Image 1: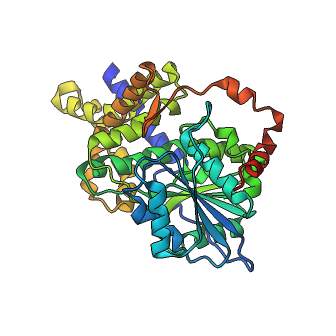
Image 2 (image 1 turned 90 degrees about the vertical axis):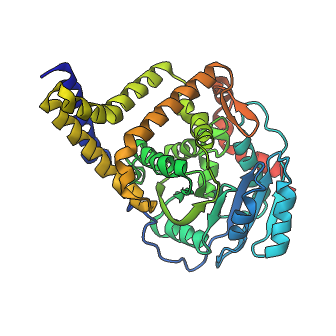
Image 3 (image 1 turned 180 degrees about the vertical axis):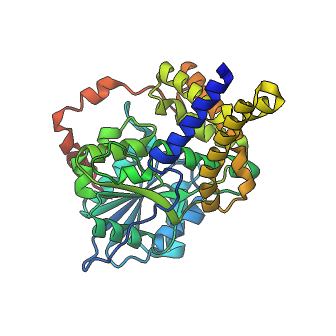
Length: 409
């Protein structure tokens, strides 16, 4: 066979391996595990970090305040230096809608070595400390929850004994670019972190979806959350790794009735959302970047190019191999499109989306080396400083409790 045929055969082999050996990542049936309601419902503190979220808060915060939860639950919204009146709007929404008690706090600017979101989460946990909650629900300000969301999460954790239960919120898919990019975002995430493997204690795979994370308070203390992950730009994955590394059990699946209300109408909006953390995912390593670019090209771009080239004269073998690889790729993407209720004709366009992701990843690295790092809402985060982690010391496990007492209102 020619070199082109061998490359195409390697692409097909990669797809057959992904299909059968990567935790069946393409299946979308990983939902909240079977659950029985506890006799006594544990108390929950809902922590919502929010920075300039006035545009989405009217759709998301009332859904939290309206939770139908039989136990004691409170909402702690942390206004992370907003300039659009986020904090006051939250208070007004609580006065208007009622429901669960709401406390609004403000932590001030994060010190060196902390990302803004995790500094806000730390402050929210500190505010909740006096209530001694059994669970913490960490949820983003753009996430809307069905009335039984908290109840279902706690029941699932209680029944199955998980220390962390997370749901991948259903992202908004309305604009043309959202339809093209968003389902693939979740598809690629599941490919990197197969949901079935996350729930296996012996597996090293760990991940969570930051928009909806239910965490046992005692587990947060044991895993030093959020101090242990204070520099993480991809904080949800880092949090899950810290929990699993401390001996905790982690579960992640797709949401039924937990939705993101944040719009990404333009390609620019999606590009910024993805590129801000893509190079951080690669640990700012140029070799990993090169390997990722080559891997994306081999897996996603070679099949359609080989099919066209084979039909144009490169040989029947090239066309057959390329077509077979593209067919497997398309078939694995169909379940995710069905989950997002999108037309199936989008499935063969996955190579186009993958090429966009390749460009976003390269752009993320370019921005990093230009000194812009991971930028989000006016803040830029550089490469994490290992020295800061080293200084945390063996006594860091107690840091959450000690600082929480100091921060009590």
